[in-house]
Image 1 (cartoon, one colour):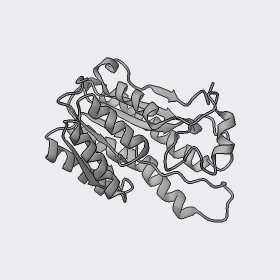
Image 2 (cartoon, rainbow, N blue to C red):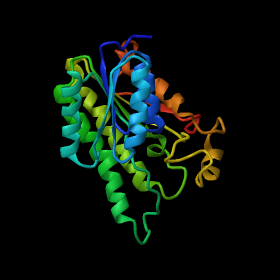
Image 3 (cartoon, one colour):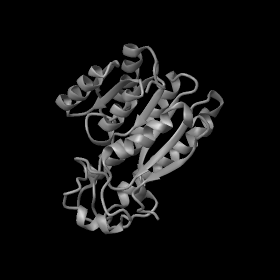
Image 4 (cartoon, one colour):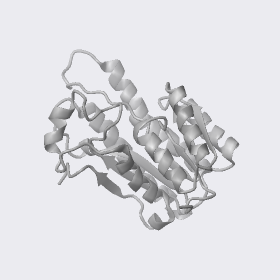
Length: 247
């Protein structure tokens, strides 16, 4: 497929999991793809090599999503390398669990807020200034922002809910330019952050109607759809891809 040929996409946190799967899906539809990473340089280069082998341009850039300056630099580097930016996928995130009345963890929670919410705001602001008319913004959210389901997720849920709210509201700001902004809210996906055989799985699985974690590719597919021409009249929407968690 080549419906995204000539388009340039940026996937934050694209070195693994949902981000890497999304980069592959977009490249498979013909887009040139930039990914960002914080620590996984080797894995990022592996993804880049895989995308390039498929016939598209690809590059990886190191950037900490918690740092607005680095985010602006990331977006600038993508435009400098590829000449434009058409698609932004806000995927980079931190997952920290802990009760609201816990004795510690303030630093970890603060970083989670800076990445999961602040990083989304910074990236959307920077991208919107350079994005071509008719562009696409997709933020990867979480269904726990709608229904927590377990103790210890209040801080994580809040960051995801705030990012979703910001993205949806941005749809109004950018509509005149034909830029859409949507949210894909994920349930449990089998990634390094929350593996299907991890310590949290026994608590999460009973709440999922389909009884299993998602494969990253099952999250990437609707993201790629929202990035494409068939989704041109969808904006300000939230798509739950959760295996029936919210059913």
